[in-house]
Length: 437
Length: 132
Image 1 (tube, each protein chain N blue to C red):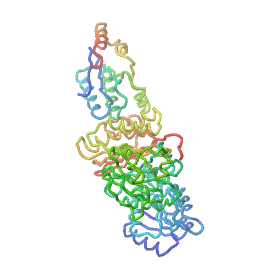
Image 2: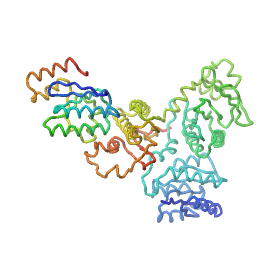
Image 3: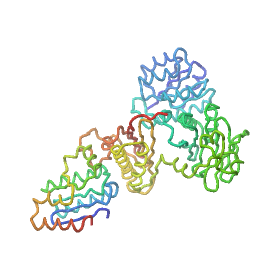
């Protein structure tokens, strides 16, 4: 089915160029000059994506998107602005925009972004993908971690990278995480991600952050607030982010700890007598167990290779449920549902053959624990495998795939599968009262 | 094999070695199938080692329950963890099964079908060889 995009912008030339490019990509494209015109058009036409300028006459892009979403809650959106600011970007993500773009931009970049956003969203009229929906906006509301370190993990380029953040409580770590995720979607190079986040933050927030190379267990492309840090690798060789330097250095010491501080300080007595927050402000020496940080970065994804042990899945899910603060009853429900999904992936995805992999991804938001179980197996015809009958007899059909049981256990379960393309099961469980930053 | 059997005359006690997921479900299916082949009509599944049960395991239990009752026997669950009780309840199967709390309940519940010596032997076997 052809996906339909609405472009809303007062600049006719830009709009026309974008429309031409997107039509070449196979999309159906509608155009509007203003918010009112967009609302009028959307009243009669189901949309898959709206790309809107932030500043529009009478009604701005944020208001427009809010009103469009009232009519079509699953609608994806991208906001374009020539007046980029941290506040507007945060507000856009908070509203549920999938991403934002600052002018000037390359048409090719926007085309890639549109493709990515639409790939993650359902066709108009389809069910909302809870995992994709929650991925970025909820990060904005996420409570800061218990410790001083905040981490996140995503794919940048060909390697698996993580971001390491350090900031004092209240410094806006949730916002920084959201910015990292959004920028990672734009950039294939970790260095560019850090540069762009630093550009957004400027001197507003005092934080140290960097991108961790998961394979090499080395922190790369680090910076602190608006300043640029000198970077030291495991061999203490330097790799400057740019021509600018300040007195913050990073290194991996002989004990496999991350050392943060001036190069001179790194060689001096590590006991500076400062509290961690003070030391961070001062750029003085800090030492962090890199191994534990890297391990914690990997905690949100469990990769299994069939035939796989159900016990590994149970243990990891119990850990995640405990971190999310689930009570025993809900923990049991979540673990049972995840074990069911993994078991199904193994039985139906691979037929007992030892190949492929099953990936269990956990994402905690302030309101929900989201779990995605994805296999790269043979897939199935979801409609044929899941009859409309929902009586008790269907729950335990031996030929079934346990989806009905999962639905009894979880607040929401969404199954996506196609023959030859693997299966993805997304599950959602409420975690009680929101914990706001 | 992942599932053990403790058999006294007329009653077969199947003891899974852990959660009824993956291979353990197939072992359970085999053991219950063997009971049908041996024309044993009274079966107890010792659920004490089990905390998590898959939908497929539920299917195995329910299908054998129906077959055994059709033959005049029964399948009862011994020592179910609260989580298993909860799952059965969520799936609307709580009322379908009869639950036993202790080993002694096996003889007590199947007692009417067993003669005096068989009943005494069953109690003796359970006392000596639990979980074999």
